[in-house]
Image 1 (cartoon, rainbow, N blue to C red):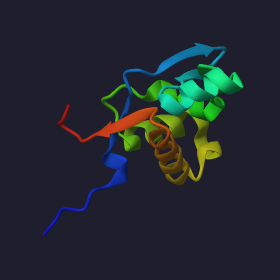
Image 2: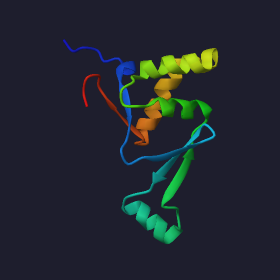
Image 3: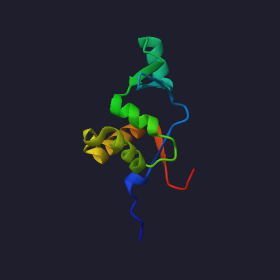
Length: 115
């Protein structure tokens, strides 16, 4: 019988090639456009080599809590302490947020006790 995995036990890790900056509490992720299609678009359509993705206040706060050791549940508890009831529905929002960050390759997950 397989053990059921709880999504909140995942530990988010910012991917190593992600560059980001923080100013006035707002995080901006600098997304490099790599790959053959990006190179073609840059050459022929003058698209930028780097896009700036500004996170909102909630997203910026959550981003700054990612340290490679805290689980999604742990981060949720910190968010709850900071934002209170304004963070609700907390774990629905966090799950969607982390799914999106993973989908755009800003983060990956590691399991507890693993590097």
